[in-house]
Amino acid sequence: MDASSARPPARPDRTLIIIVGVIAALVIIALVVVFTRGEPQSLDESTPEGVVQRYSAAVIDGDEETAKEYLVDELADGCVRMEGPPTDGMRVTLVDTQERDDSADVRVLIAISYGGGGPLGPDEVQEEGEFDLVRDGDAWRIDTAPWPLTICQPEMPR
Image (tube, one colour):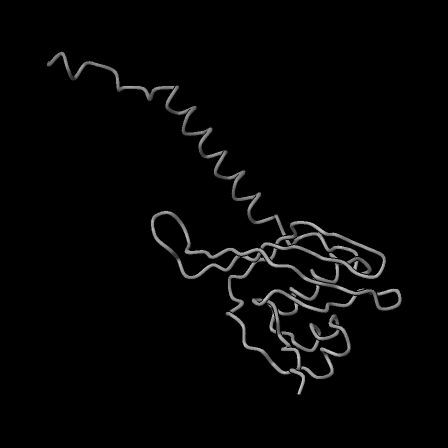
């Protein structure tokens, strides 16, 4: 009988099994976090930030009628449709708000992802934009929106 055939079968290294187990657990936790994140928290509609959030969501969803409800009457009534960039892959993130008695400025970061990208991730363009809002009774209305989120072009004076 050969001496090599008399050896007991090799046992797996316990350290390797522990490392593989930890990696598998981390992958499962990461997947749970990604898939349970859900939608962003809804902001109060009576605030400038809440109005900007709802308007932006309506524009991104292609719901122009709902988006117009958040515009000042002069802009919504005489709405001349303005073609902006594609909203697929667009994200809007609140940067900050300057609120005064009758007006507010809401700065946002607008990110638009284009395609799958290369080895460093998706192709993405980011720009900062600002919404100008005015108080209309107890509500806030958008007077101007950043270009990527503008759906109504102001009428030009004649």
